[in-house]
Length: 291
Ligand SMILES: [Zn+2]
Image (cartoon, rainbow, N blue to C red; front, side):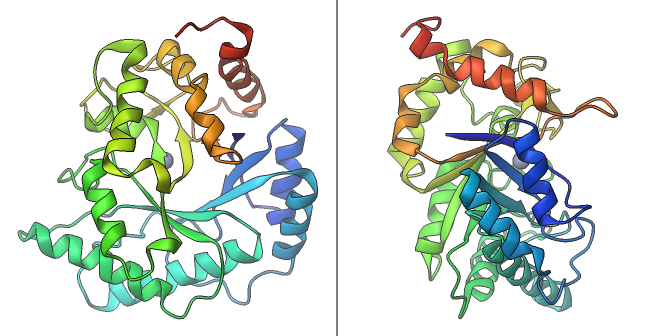
């Protein structure tokens, strides 16, 4: 797996990639444009291609995170048109940057007819991918369960992907904190990862898994709150991550980007946490983690 963290594009995409190298990362996530708005960034900045070339030269895998207001479950209307245009713009930028995918939260539906919410999501994804010729995928992220609890189970995610017109361009980004907060992550401590991974296999989620957001949780299991903590310092704790990261199943997922979205103190970076994660993931080879 490739490991890194979310990085700012304040100085452009290429500079974000250079920053990743300085941190000892070989993956990173970025916002393709202003994270607080659905407004379009056009044309795609010239340094996107320089970023792609730099990443391929340095063996860096990247993913883009769509802006916060992106909600594929939104009802048809003006906002939905803006959402589709924004998603397409994110895809074009990320494709120019050579990224594996754009990460999209499953979506929140505010109406009474839940089925309509799912239909909205599928329709929105279909329209965003209509006529798209890039290879960067759209990666659906599982949610923490705030506001309705949609998008928290493997069954929902797999079903939505299956019903999309171009499922080969749709994959998943698994957020560990959201899985813990929603209760998707089973209770029972360190070996819970093995049971969770078996569920991923059983439901057909595992083959379409394309990225991981690695976050501990500030709140307890099933707290339904999306608040990330540094790895090992939240309610999930170090053992769960040690077991997950050292699992032999990751050998099947060569090149999969694993990205930290954890908080860091002001004027510091994720450098130490990246080193810590590498140590945890080497557990198996060193014989520190059994079974
Ligand atoms: Zn996430």
